Length: 512
Image (cartoon, rainbow, N blue to C red; front, side, top):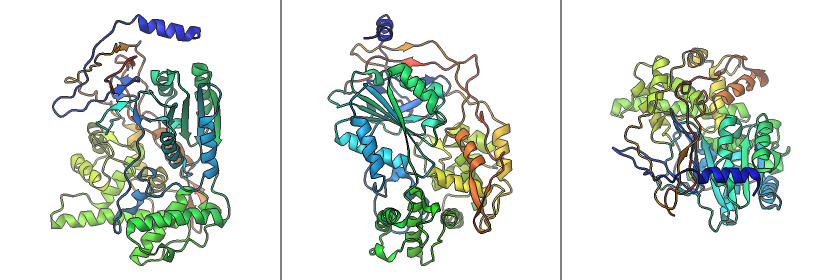
């Protein structure tokens, strides 16, 4: 053991054992981790959550969907893994390579290139091969919907594979806290698979990894799907057949691929999946699908608006829903910038934007976009690139006649930027924390000033908005205005006199 390791262990040995109890009262919720640490911000809860990777249940088949865009979310896994065989083999070889105990791979590429789906496939195969697979989800106040608890014990595992999505959106301080987690310091092969859109944050992260672990590090760029029709047609066909099963289409071969599938604009996995989804949906509804990528986004955005309109009209028949389509459009625009928020913060944001009944709006938004975490509201549109298309066409600077810029677009961004309100502190009056038996230890480490917080991805989305290009007229690209973004610090974090604290535990919360 090196000198740093001896110092760390000797310091831990000097901490008196503490027994804590984790419980939730009055319908509350508690989160605990076995065989790992939890870093907690005093104002907003866990800085990140660790989840054991589990395969999702297979999607149910059914008829035409009211808003098909959600099938594009990689987490739904409607489309089986296809393509990217070379990259999958590369990642698998990296995982299994001999060498240092800790190795990190930074996989990067533009939105829609298939990073998340590739990582999910690697995670599934890691389970098959005997690895303990854990995902790290960032976000102050993040809430786990898995009430079974998280036992991260490594006994019997071939090694640990930790998957970190949106790694370029984590503040470096938070990533460093993650790297200090005792889960990563067990004497087993440890692989960190970090997903990002660019390499902008890779240099400081690489330095932290090499300093903390003497880790082997490398990056892997996901290029566009190869130019030419053959591989793209293969990926289109796999996606089309998957969506056809979901829609109940008996003969998928009756749904042809776009004639321009070999064009550069069809170079991303997401665009090919969008083309397949739109082709199937248009086939079911008896309309002609668009042929270009802009038309695909426009088609799916129109289907979203149809859904909002249908719900609003059904209110006359007794449906508990009251938000007009134009108002829901602005709500979805807002959610794409803020990300999902705790209810109290969602009310603050809706009130700040001048919605007349924030509670009604949030309830109706959750009807359209059920939150992944029940305690939150303003669930954004997924996948990210689809949400970014919605943002782009609502702002001035494009010439898509079907979607003129919304008069409230720039004003909404300005309000979110310029009138930030303090984050309310969570009510922890009924919270108790317990780490039973087994020599468990708990210790508050020196307080550190909590970083200024913003909804997950806000700064990245601001950069994307500044760079995003949407067609003008017959397809000529044109950048959106440089100020069309949300600046840092939309929702400030804890004040300096109420810093966040890091709680580190070297023990177990319960025996698995």
